[in-house]
Image (tube, rainbow, N blue to C red):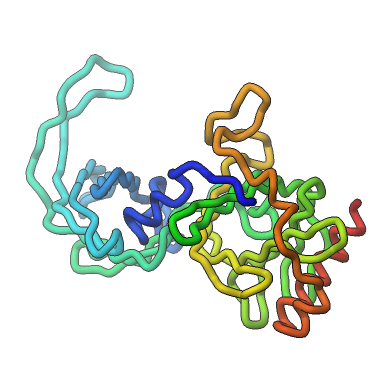
Length: 295
């Protein structure tokens, strides 16, 4: 049987399918200014320091509703001056007008295009510590998905990087749960992470593929026996350094229980998988080989 996961696993996808990630955003080609985005519910707040034609720094604030399922947003750039000095007594800032409209069209949770001052500027969530795959896949992940009215999840603690497959960047492994994952750079799944979980005999019991957005992912859990796809969200709740982003029980496990009964699922042998889908089967065999080398 599968174990039920907490409702928060899929709530963001249900509420705002393309809502932007909160954090620091920028254009890598325009270092020196950036944008703080904070999405809560159906509202997005954007704050930024910018510079006027005279080089004077200016503090801006804008808010507004997220539209089209979180894919677009617009607000008015309010200007504030004469606020509290860094080491001085509190002094309320003064609203000194506005510099017109600002809008953002989001292509994903971590990329978009900002229209401001008559310019269209590509922006993205700043990746200052997550890094790139395979390093960015290390840590504790929860893969959550729904089948019908039921919601399920699997947890993986990817702790090591092994050699890459012929189509990827390097396989990360969870030896205890027999899990593997790798970003693909060629083939049908190029640009996406493909992950598997195996039973002790080396048959596949879980298949996943998703696009990684820093510490999140959007994609699918794929039934290993029917190949039906079910929408899935991936969340890295623990960094490789052991810094957790969710509350843990006293025994150190997630409050949202992972699937303890997962090993009872129907499995597909890797030869059967290869016969049905040669590309997935080849990947699964290569990842099982990497996993076996570490056990």
